[in-house]
Image 1 (tube, rainbow, N blue to C red):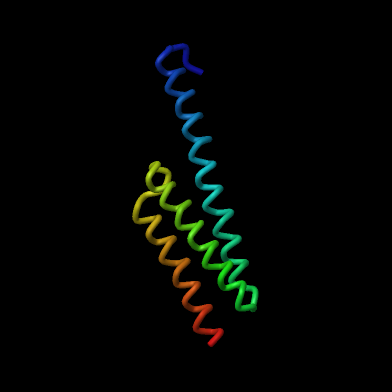
Image 2 (cartoon, helix red, strand yellow; image 1 turned 180 degrees about the vertical axis):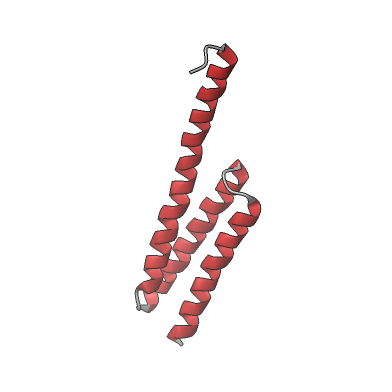
Length: 94
């Protein structure tokens, strides 16, 4: 551990930011899992729930991108994969 005051402060800031970023990433992962599980259920009203979850996941991803936790291309890729999962699910049901 460094005795330099600026190095100690920098380490504390890095720790704080890492914990904050972990919250955003965890939230995105949690809501993504809920969304994908809601797609697996076969009923029609659950498709409405899935679309509700999809909008929540989009909000979480956009917030993480805005905060700089995720790169904007990474966020776009995640959103594209989620939309593709919804579309394939709708095609399989019809």
